[in-house]
Length: 64
Figure: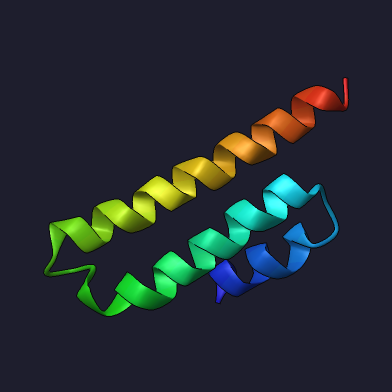
């Protein structure tokens, strides 16, 4: 599962990214079964995806 891969790889990075990835993983675990039928579940996962992407972008900008 890609969510687990993201969480695993985030451990190689900054703590903020690791936290965001773990929150994404927990949101996925709590909501994946309702994604097709529940807008709130889908939105919760999308929000955590966005948060994780923002942390990745922030980290990449620091590398410049």
